[in-house]
Amino acid sequence: MLATLSLCLTLSAAPAAHAAQEPEPPSKREVKELFEEWQQLDPRQAEQFEREQQILARLELVPLKKNAEKTWRKDLAKWQDRALRKLPKKGGSHYYWEDEKKGLFLIGGETKKPQGLLIGMHGGGVGSGDPNGIHGTISAAGSALDLLTISPGVLEKTERGWTDSGTEEWVLDLVDAAIRTWEIDPSRVYFSGHSMGGYGSWTLGAHHADRVAGLGPSAGAPSPIYNFDEEVIDLDPGVIPNLRNVPMVVFQSIDDPRVPPDVNQAAARFVAAAKERWGGYEKFRYWEVNGYGHGYPDGGLQAVVEPLTEFQRELIQERVVWQPVLDWKRQFYWLWWDEPTAEAIVIADLDRAQNAVRLQSDADLGGMRVLLDARVLDLEQEVVLFVNGKEVAREMVQPTLGDLLRTARTPDTALHFHASLRVPAGAGADSPGE
Image (cartoon, rainbow, N blue to C red):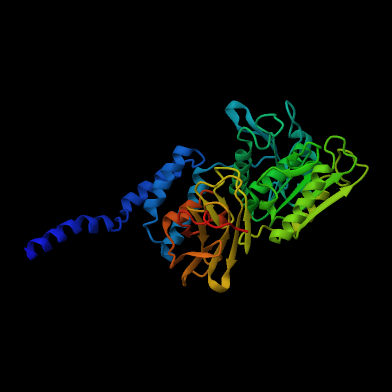
């Protein structure tokens, strides 16, 4: 009877033991096929993002040794160069979608050997807006500062043209295409704009703060939120928190009849309050004058942009503050969030003494990843993760092919990380952050 009982226990335990086995890593052939399929996906589309997640989960089973990583990075560089979009090197007007005559953009500035990229965003509104209006001053600034300039036209002429109808995604595609075409240093990308283009440079620059070295809005402001007395009480989410680490020069004339100073004045106050709360914002300058109406400062936009060229983007920040607003913007500096919670605020700190990352938030951060390599923390030691002061993970983290591909769609290789540590489900929701 004891022998029978022992046999039954053994048989009943066998399926559980089998279920607990780690999945087999993919074969070389499967890796090749998955990589080829991954190249064809656009993860900004929900269904394709879901498939990408399945592919990356398989490829996370493929460890990356140093020599293998070098080979994969070379393959990725070849793919970027061979298969992905580049721009014509000739200055002047072009269409991104030539057959449809859609996506007008103008190339100017230094087109031979540019030392950086300046995106110039035009003004306008409902039914109006033309990149030719800003191209002259932007191109002149680029020529003087050794920057390539691209002046896109919004895809639809609406009040928020820079964030409507796919324009925001397209501007980021133009940045990536310019980096591929001219081999531009990704740490020297600047956004500037006038009027509605000032709104665009404020807003796109904040949403993609990890992509820019500096922002120069002129006579334009982020979208305000007013109370019943028409006082500015807040700004659109995803702007002030995200700008903690970004140099800015904001030009505003007090007598501007089209963009009165109240919103930019409020924005400057909100920046000061954020600085008290989170630190940072050391390179923010609010430049207020009188007598210029809705015009440019003396010297045009060069006067706004030139001080910014002293700075390069610093990607590995010791503290990152992120307020996501776009479901397709999943990476922000060294953070990754598959399904970012809109308008949640996340404070992320590197604690190098403890080889740790400390996250704070009121939101459930489950599924967020801390992106890792030697620039972030020491992967020769255990990496520790705290959420709202509570230790939630402690692991020896290994580089994998899946982790590398997760961040490798952009030619901005500084954004490529070869390892990650995932936040467990429910972390952050049970105790409030800062």
